Image 1 (cartoon, rainbow, N blue to C red):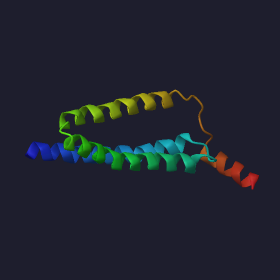
Image 2 (image 1 turned 180 degrees about the vertical axis):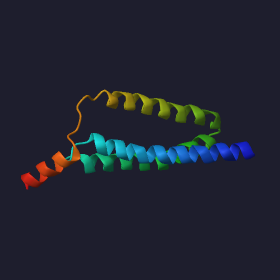
Image 3 (image 1 turned 135 degrees about the vertical axis):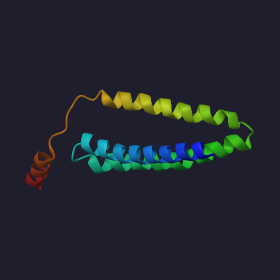
Length: 108
């Protein structure tokens, strides 16, 4: 039981850090004009997953298919890995923050 609790603790710390880094990465890789929308969509999809995951797990258990739970969540992880790989193929580098701020100020 102690080992399980340590693993759960470490998983929670790593997942919380990963979620925070996703917001930071999306913010850095988005242009100033699209940054708020990109971070909003990222947050919304994360919230959806936080609701859908437990719901799906509960439905699988209720239907006596609890053994499919790992497969369903592993597929979600693999699909996330694929989408992150596709997103990393983007080769354009955003402008530095100070240049973006100056350009936005000049536009208004």
